[in-house]
Image (cartoon, rainbow, N blue to C red; front, side, top):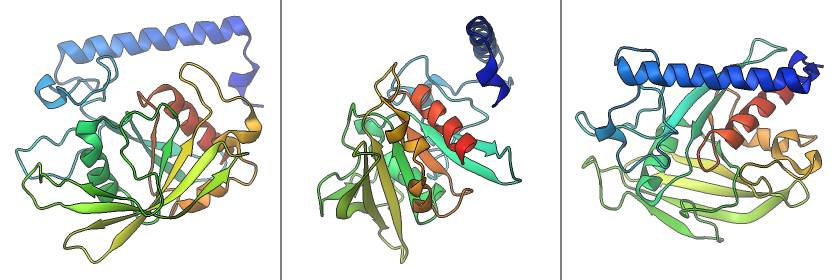
Length: 251
């Protein structure tokens, strides 16, 4: 059993306090020192994009949108690499905040450039928020119709086939196909929606928790461990971080 599962309640509480203190210390350093490892992006980049004022990405560790020079390449998404405790393999993830109306096109732009096909998006909240993906059969979602960055990146995301259910129906799995004008390649992106993990809560049982599925069939939806899985809840921190740790630990 891992050492962290053998800690007493008091020891666990103390570790939590230490992590909170470390987080506050890093955030304070990042606010006062623009050269700090923990520096934040300028507010002119993040205004209107971040969902929560206290949930941000580090300037030196963030996904940058592929947009023309001098355009705002900001998205609230962080690349994460996890090393296996059993093998030399590394697994990659992108933890992002839940998409807003103004960031939906950014999410799909990121997915196109950062994911190989097939790729996967793991959504860990049933608080649907803005409907950033097509959820009914044969529905097509147009991408970037306003050509926000004047670079001609226009595309569609289409829901093809029927939804699969996993984990006693707790997880809805949809096959999405993304196409971009001028590109011969199309990309399959599997969307996995886990519906039973409340904010500030826990899943009702390990038997239907996505990361703890006995056969971990959802893993096969992704091209390879080094192909990042995009993971989000609402803030992209609590449930997302927990899923990433479980996915890596049980993988």
